[in-house]
Amino acid sequence: MKSLRGLGLLLAALWMVGTAVAQETTNGGYKVLRKIHLDGDGGWDYLKFDNDGRRLYVDHNNSVQVLDGDTLKLIGTVEKVQHPHGVALVPELGKGYASSGDPGSVVVFDLKTLKTIAEIPSSKDTDVITYDPASGYVFTFNGDSGNSTVIDPKTDKVVQVLDLGGKPEFAVPDGKGYLYDNLESKDQVIRINTKTLKIEKRWKLKPDSSPCGMALDLDHNRIFVGCHNKTLVVLDAQNGKVIQELPIGDHIDATYFDPASQTVFNSCGDGTLSVIHEDSPDQYSVLENAATELGARTMAFDPQTGHAFSATAQMEAPPTPTQDDPKPRRRIVPGTFEILVIGK
Image (cartoon, rainbow, N blue to C red):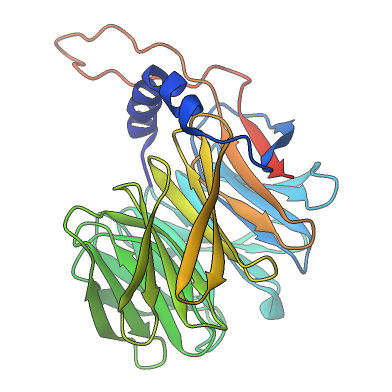
């Protein structure tokens, strides 16, 4: 995930090509249906939708803002999650886990009260976080550290720190004992055995793919990898074979597969939602690049309504560079952070 400075540079570049992006999008069925304003002018990262609990978790403004999944009204906040990135839920224990990139920790909170229970030290740039029901462990993927912190939620203790051999991005468990992760810096997809805590497979992608978003089709053993080279790569989850490559938008950050509609969604910072249909496990087609808003790069999905959620904000013009600060940080325009509801 990008820092606020990186986000500012990204949006500055994307604003310059906004017209071209708009010309490349289609007039397909998906569009922004609604916008929900949330207070706070800090940075943001992943969104997570809990279909069972009907909640939307938004990592934003050094906190996790929690919205009712149906009304999309704010119902509470997990406070003091510095530089938040992601949320993992362990409903059988009534606990949630929020990754904090700075100082590099995991904030444990009560799912009912949203009050903090504990804070577990992790590694520098604690980013992606997920819960693997097969092993019962919570895994963080720590970008700058190139490792994964494995936590037992029954004790909230670190079980192991697993060296990954590269900078990780998004990770997804299959619920059967394997966890798949992108190594952005190595152009690799890895498969981790979540019970032995060993990396069993490394599959190489094309050079400079820079894999980021990831989703799984569990029924057909397919991995969908959204890459920064503006490509969605479809892999066989058993042997890593590339099935197909398809074009998507620029600056992908999240990929989601909806098994009900057999559709792969890719949210991109250039203001597009790339929508790809699974015609068969071995054949895919691009349906559209729907227009969203610049910076709307992360995503969550509500399988009940078929709506996707993304987040963005307007950015101020960059300050004048100085000798002391040659690359000044752009700031969010106050009061412009919002959640986008995207659907047909």
